[in-house]
Amino acid sequence: MGPKKKSFSEWYDYVLKEGEFIDVRYGVKGMVVYRPRGMAIVSRLYQMFESDLKERGHQQVLFPLMIGLPSFKKESDHIKGFEEEVFMVSRAGGKDLDEPMIIRPTSETAFYPMFELWISSYRDLPYRTFQSVAVYRYETKATRPLFRGREFLWIETHNLFASEADAIKHVRDDIEMMSSRLSELGIPYLVVKREPYDRFPGADQSYAYDAILPTGEVLQVATTHYLGQNFTKPFEVEYLAENGDKQYAFSTTLGIGISRILGALVSCHGDDNGAYIPPQLSDRLGVVVPILSGNGSSEVMQYVKKVYSMLPGGQFLLDDSELTPGEKYYMSELKGYPLRIEIGIKEARDSTATIFRRDTRKRKVVSLDSLPREIDLTVEEMKANLKTEAEGLIHDAASREEIIELSGQNRIIRANFCGKKPCADGIKDATGGYEVRGELFNEEQPHGACAWCGEKAVRKVILAKAY
Image (cartoon, rainbow, N blue to C red; front, side):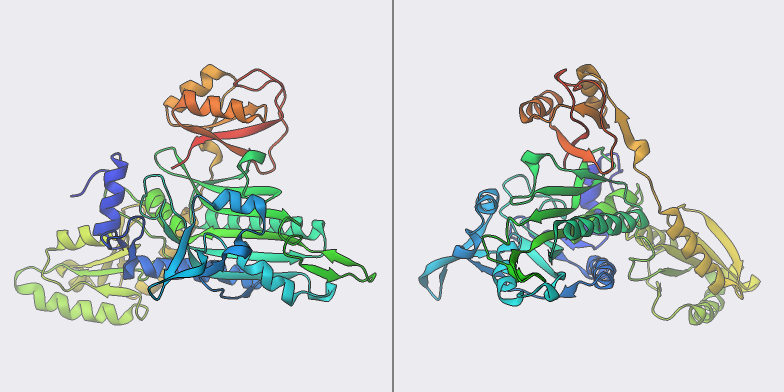
């Protein structure tokens, strides 16, 4: 048996490795190999979000990995925000390059020079794009598989609109889409509007989707940004309006952290027995385990083949290895397969099958004739049971003392805030790392004083420690 989940760090590393999701032994810090089990989930996550984006009118594109340095420097706030994080290529073919190239940390400065060439009229707008790629950032903190790496997988959208109102509506639609999907996947999350000093470099508004981990920490799994005209002006992305005037477009971006969502899924749904992958993301619905003993083994295997032929094609694995039934149970649960079908001599003689559910760890004996229908019903129940709410995980604090007390219990905290960065810095220092994550989306306005410094509060915010 592996580590218990209460020892989260050891448990997390063990499940990722022994569950065959990823391998960290590639030899480059902050970069991992996605094994077939992990890559199957990644592929389904990509399909899910790409389908949503295409339904909303986004077109898929693919830009080069490299970004020219002059282009990268064109938006001043952006370069300041990323200059400490970029990988830079300065040599090729054994020679120094005339001008270094940036390996994309994000792609605004790649897209906008092309937008300037592609957009000319109001008829071209709105213009919605996305690409599914890896990005690279020189993470200086301790790296952590899937949570914090120097290479990570994501989807990034880059979008242009004729008006500010259209762009802001698109941001709201992003929030609705992401909220729906994270809820469906059973990941407890918060949507927070970042503080002005903590926005994406070059954004007028930033919204983050913070998954709540079992440790009480939060993990940013996606972000949506309203960029205004902060990129369209320096890159001269103009269009001819209906009245004949030249106008700068308004823009937005959405980044969906596929790697981090995979890490959040393993963390939030797993237990002492390993991972649990929701049925809509698992490469297989489950494993068929023959329980062999003595003279009845051939009878059991003959029945197992009959059962296996009734199952949806390619959806189940037949574990006919030489492991004991207990070892097979352990491996199926560690890897997180949603279902296990157990068949022994009793099932063979009664024309039944035993269905084990990974989420509730309960068994149900069903007749062979009803097995396909029972599998479908069980999968739908498992999907429905994933829905989760984060509200019950939030604890309100009205004073400095309450903030310190709740932070000591690893709670997610909501408190009145004055909006000043020195106050946020004071909270972080006194609580061992709790950050002002931002204001909850659609949060009510505060009444009274800042819970930390006593000055007039301008909003309610979430305080949490980020992983």
